[in-house]
Image (tube, rainbow, N blue to C red):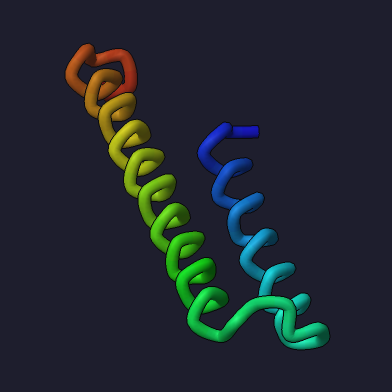
Length: 71
């Protein structure tokens, strides 16, 4: 499993769990909860961007070396 995928999935699950806990138990002040959710969302976007750039860089190296080209 790709490390970026694992981290992104973990952050998503954490966000869902925080939402469920807030829904049922009103554990945090609403402003703190919004800040937590926005922070988790930002971290997911950062992980996705790093994963995407890394993937594209690897594919570019393969394509420029000629290993993956047909013919």
